[in-house]
Length: 326
Image 1 (cartoon, rainbow, N blue to C red):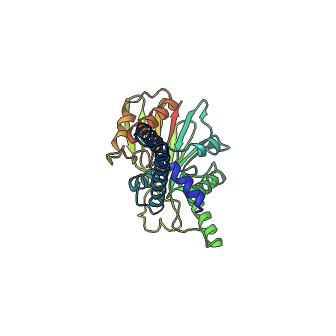
Image 2: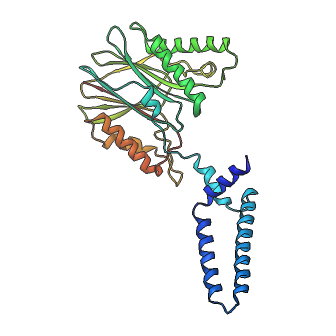
Image 3: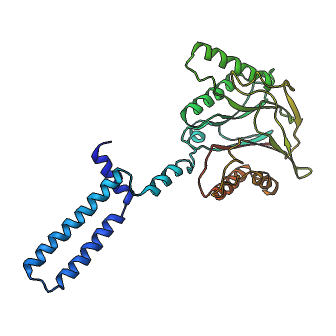
């Protein structure tokens, strides 16, 4: 770093403290010297001495700053705050689909990423037969590499969805394409993977789902209750699926009018507060209590509740995706 950059960094760090101390010191020195019994010549010498002392103090403090002998607490706090960010919604604004509301479903998603480019993603679309395909995922890590991996899955979901396919078969096609891509491009990090839940819903409310991802919640309007649905299937990965136990390829259930599916990434319930406590069960209590008439308001209220819990900052990407049967 150039000296000018160190000086700029120094003044950014100390802010108004240094000018204020210098101004107060000069004011006190002037008052004392003016009221002293010294001769004019002696007073001039004292003024020069005062200026020299102030210069020396400022110079020494800057040298100590360069060697990090002072302001260590500020240095530590700065490093800690890098883990806690206010979040970014540009991926949602530029990439993710706009809400759907038609005669059959209302679908709404909301995401806030730790970095401008994050690992969380969601997608939804319809096939030629009128089936609704909804996906939500979370690629390991933060930053551009996780974001690129997520966008690959986002793109492949759109390409491989077919009217006669199941969610399991679509995930298989995505993994097969990833394997081919990795074989052709050995520089691709094979340790990358994503949790991914893929849902297929017909116009009558019959739902199929597959993929390993955090459990989701289904709200029944008729009973006013929530139930947790566990996921099963495969990761999006070339290496993570070989050790998995075989389970049902695709599971299913039926949605009645007014029922809602709440899907989310682990960042929603793993956000911590200053006491290192997770939001955790607060998510499920929130889903129990929140009014269910407006999906957008549900997302806004949930994110506000989480940011209140964390003090306005997040430590991971967080996403919610909601599907209401009309």
